[in-house]
Length: 243
Figure 1 (cartoon, rainbow, N blue to C red):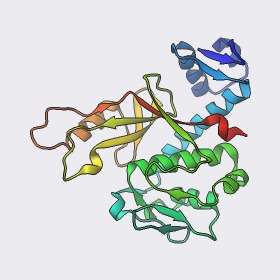
Figure 2: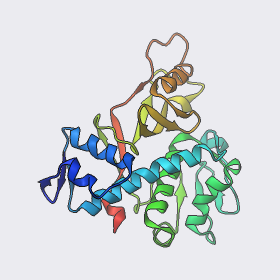
Figure 3: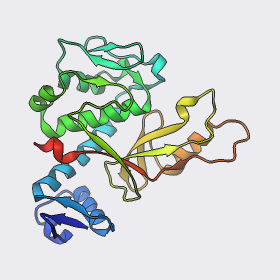
Figure 4: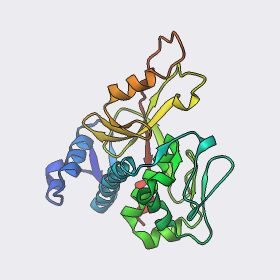
């Protein structure tokens, strides 16, 4: 259910201001879920929808960039823009522009390798750039740091348990019996596109069953516990990024 300034709003009324069919599909899903989605204004909802579209766009672009999958120990980056730290994280160089540096990952993907949680952070930072513009992005993220789930305070994210999955959400596949020799496959963090399509760095854009089958091949011998899609959703605090 969608509430604008405390009042329930039906999808048909919102459709009058929207032409994008993917955005309309999200509106329908929100309206059908039992959960209440609160907004002060229609513009807040529109910004979230824009951000979700940009998240999926960034995920597709990162998938096509040529950036490689690897563990923190072997991570590497373009030294023109980033300093590679001992923990495998990437810290923006002092003389680098944040927007140029984050977009370089798409432009020169073969110069980068990282694991799936850093990939999710990269997708969300690129989506932020697309949503708020380079001027504001460069101001907010002057000390940009890419490492696992360590987000800048100006890109707050929150996690919640639930099954109200929406396109643009970050979701998580768990692999409880992962092979101890390959601990990086204990899970796969993904961007959800809807229609059973998920982007995960290292596996590409795949269905849930394909990702589960892949993770099941990374289990310890004689495992009887399958990988599975968790009821865990990670989302940016969209409204805090709008202003």
